[in-house]
Image 1: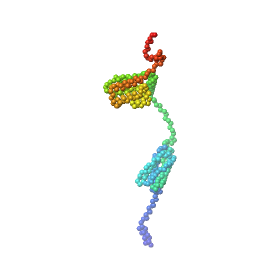
Image 2: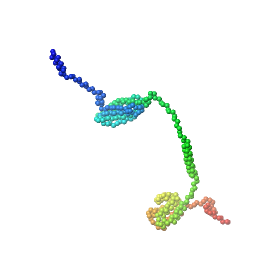
Image 3: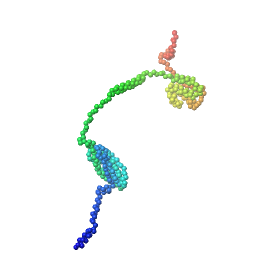
Image 4: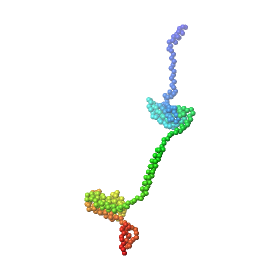
Length: 348
């Protein structure tokens, strides 16, 4: 009897202490979902708190594995907030994965607690399937501009402040006098200019073209150009005299034209130099060009003949004076010019 209980006691003493079994690890549901989700999203609003109408930025950061792409759908609504703009960042490498940030600029115009409503982000997996991940609502606080006053009221305007203005009477008088003097000077200048315009202009009678030409020919004939061997200078002055006479006498632009241009003008209307022959004028200019430009050396006799030719052209084209109107005297002869001296009548 004793051996039985003793044997049981020895068996209990030799047996090892019982060890509690380790509790089973139950994975957290949210952690498991994050570990399995290909795209995870975090959000924040800055600044927080803010004031009414401040520009808020909702930063949405999406972390995803390589081979995925994340995008913000077009037309996402954020009512009652006002959407200003959306700035989409570029993907950044973060070890084995990628990260992409969306900066959404918003405004809110009501004080108090508020939140950005939740919306969906779309992502494309490596197989090309389009899926979505939900961005949860994000809360923030908007403070009123008059939050420190229980019952804000509009303050009254400050009373007007009297300012002593400097005495500017002397300056006003000086400036007024100067302005009056300047105005009077301008008026006097204008009136003086108008008075000069209204004065009668004394017209100097024009010297007839043949008188100018004959005087220039006489002066050239008395010169020593031929004696000094300056034949080209002699012919340059001679052609200038001839062209000037044709221009003043017949109204043809000759001084600034070449011989070819004058020839074309006279060929179109030869009668404009009547009673002279257009061919005589062109022939004289051609001979003169040979001396001036072709270095032809005529003798003094030929040069003097050229001057006589021009003189003959001038004398043959002197305009005839019309007889003064008046009664004819005996014999049908016109009455003498008024400027002629009166002859003594013989006593009958």
